[in-house]
Length: 283
Ligand SMILES: [Zn+2]
Image (cartoon, rainbow, N blue to C red; front, side, top):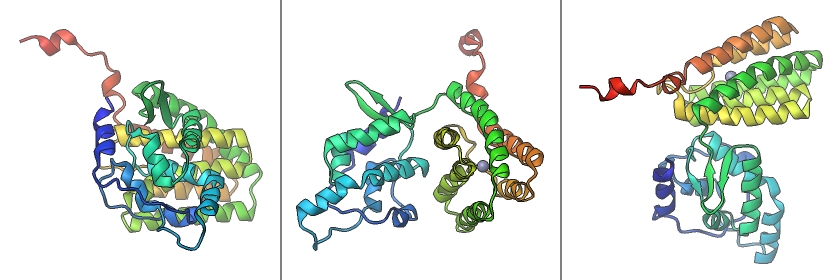
């Protein structure tokens, strides 16, 4: 059913495409975007202005080498809901926007597809993933298994530096809440979980957690009650304090309760109910 968003992305008349060079990914992460969120053109807002100093060939080479930057930009745009689930990611347009070859974009899309953030269809192209309710329930089941293990491992290997990183991240999240920057809140609260997995030091867990937290962000967009945005801030703080006290039992319990809260804020049950067709069409 994704075609509406797709058309919007394709037909946006403001798609004039400047040639650009990358700037730091850090700067783009905090770019505030005020335009219609459905459009691929929101990506333009993250892009820097044209650099006059470098020869075109050198600039192009640098762009091609900035392997993760395009991936990160698309990833963050999806995470922040600037690209909605079901939006078509048109290869040519992305190649123009980022000033790279289509092959390079295909590579990035393949990586996103591998992580289940993007869905690739032969003949039709790439779309931002649109997890079904069944997939959403699977994601929560997987998170309930993985996240307690992440916390146990994190507490076993905890250092003051790791704790400081968690707290710094929490500060960013609280700051985004104070500014009422919902997009940043959604992204940062998802990243809290990925960061915990990264700091736990098991790369397989971290990779899975990253994927699961992006899918959760997409699900929040698709199924969340309109009043809620994502994780509750105070719950992350409580989890961090349990980690700081090296109390795995409490940390795990808080995490499972936290996941219950996220899941129950989504409207996942309605569509899984059997529909009584007779009742629908009777009278
Ligand atoms: Zn959370």
